[in-house]
Image (tube, rainbow, N blue to C red; front, side, top):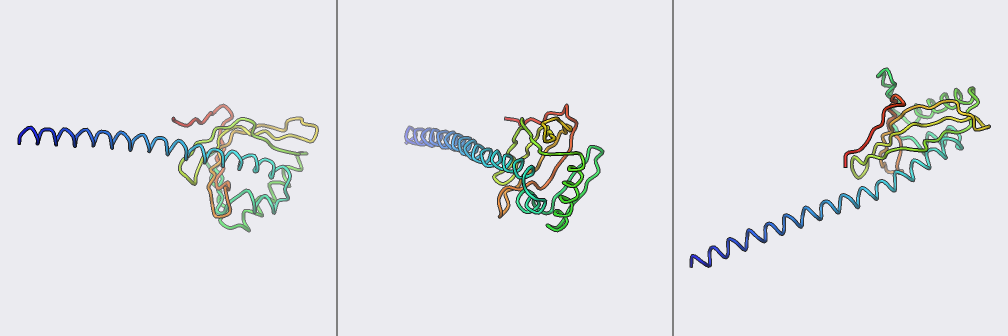
Length: 172
């Protein structure tokens, strides 16, 4: 009977090790696949954002690219929050008007890092560049966006300004 008990305990231990190892492998694979899916979606949202920001009306920008509430954290740490869609729309109108006074034509963030925080949230961090119509550069600004997947799709819900020499990287 003692041999049977030892065999049974050994079998249970081996099965537990297999199950635990298998669960770990599934979790890692699942997370990786999930992250890749989110990265693909967010990459498309970033492309849509820069296309839309450079081509849409202020109303379209507010409706299709930003989510309310929307926050901005300036380099000096000042935080501004627009709580409603109407407040976001007014902010965008004023912002686009100021850019047009600088002969702004388009913006782009050619290189950026996507950090998946969860299935419905991600950071996008890089340096965006503003251009005039002749492609001369107005300026570059370091920025991290918080994207959230809301009922209407991926939207920017926070903008955190940073020095141009700051690179935010994800741990892998």
